[in-house]
Image (cartoon, rainbow, N blue to C red; front, side):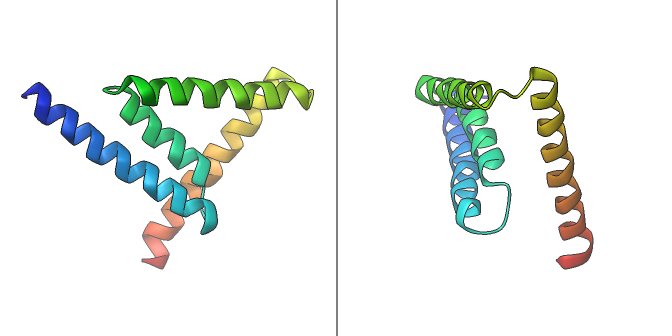
Length: 97
């Protein structure tokens, strides 16, 4: 695949996912999870997105440390959020569409 086409495709897909995440912040949904996913996709081709994702991870890590949440519990919370998000996605896809 042509590198320019790949870059445009990554930009469009990552940008669309990030915008969906922004909408999900005010609508019901896992907004931050979707935004981080979009930034992760954009970060594969764009350095600014990789820096933004790294900064966001650092801020989240500092906030969790300030809340004195142990690393083990942080991972358990992240796993629970991911599981609930996937379960809601399956429910929406199977029953609410």
